[in-house]
Image (cartoon, rainbow, N blue to C red; front, side, top):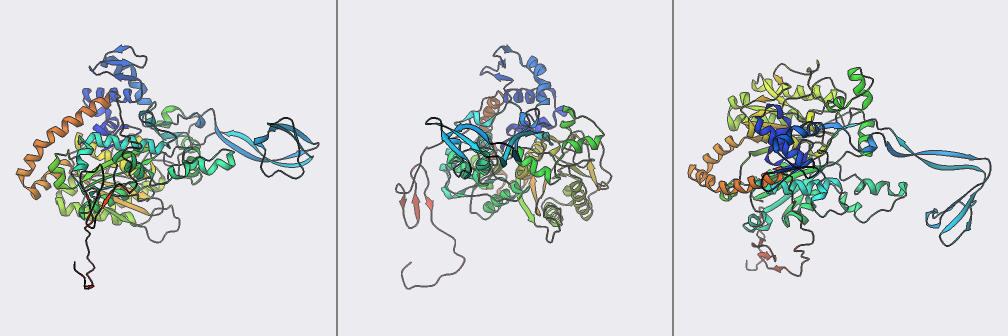
Length: 630
């Protein structure tokens, strides 16, 4: 697993540890704070385990933790948006106006700044080769007047302050979401402890796939956001804005610059359920035997003025006025913005977030063979639509089906007792009034059907906000952290459960809770009726299932090989905790265009790939004998 979100880095469970910080032993707290301080460029760790502060002065670890603790806490998770546009500087805009000119207006301008199609009654005379003088006659004149508008939404889940993923590789005008994807996928590979080139050489290149995307594309200045407003803003469209804006571009970037994969690829877009849609593609490919290794993920960077305003106009976001009304406040402080996202409490809308999360999926035989670290397993992801709807954005009935199927699968695999007492829910938990009632009703009905009386519910958006298509990735990464640490994050902003939330069979809690889990349900309720529930099983349960399938001797041999994997992963995590990152980015390396291939009837040999691509295909359709030899 790998990635980055407002809580920090995914590998080594750093982001998870940030969400349960106060419940950790002192040593783990210090490690988490030091790693985040390094990530935020407040300090840097040296090779000999010594530390330097931001000015380069030597400092011991304990003093560094003490000095930076509050800054780390204040500048991670959900908080006041730090982009100056959302604060005093204001959001850049234009206002249409009609000027009533009582006399001719004369001005000078650069020749190249004149409109191509001039009004016929404008008089233009040359000043020199580069400048002209324009006279506009008296009368009415339509203009756009530049202005700045105060942001109405000022809270979001932003990556830790000071962390900029594009700093660590040769990024040239890459949209933020794609820079995050490069970092996150590299973090995933390094966290695996497996050398990617060695792993790839073991496989037919077509046994590898990448399914990654996002829900709304790259809509910042370097992607479609800049493209779509370039004419109106008087800016030049670049050659990169169009291609880099596509929603499947995270997968394309991974294939071209991180993995060099020629196997399966694509992106399934399903609003807030996009991560689970892509996860489902990977699970189905491996179960069908089409692939042995699949990288799955999403990368969303939606904290831009236009996207935020779009969701605000829908009434979906917790804007400043709504937050003030909710708590009867006249002014909002930094502490109020940190509490903006309140799943299942009295709330007023969701809080935008940004995140990139990736998982490396592997078939069980290969995982044992290479000594992979098994952080869990995903037996299935269920997806269902809502059917007839009045409003495209309103919740519907599909989520009852997805969670119902998921619960039935766990009951069948692990037994009714495990389902009732050793599973927990990772709620979509957006912090909207509608979500708190509809999702809790889904949970309650499924709990009743299975005799569950006290089902723990956690909602990670209280910490990191809603990263749109990547939301379930944040949930799943958190679930893996719960398996590793035996803790469930509380809903930290839950002062009291709202009166319209179904609570009879559900357990909502504010502080981290110790819990011995066999499985977690990753739930998503997306705009348009994109419902999905994924089942993730704990490492303990996964190992038991593997032992039943492969035998104890195979498990013992896997554990022996796993030691080498763990050493490599631990070395990476120690370097990352000191702020040393080297994302895998191989621009222009090993480029092939076709003539270099050796194309046969049964296989294609590709230079640089150890194994050929088999052209043998499954034919379930039967065969018509054409009289020729096979």
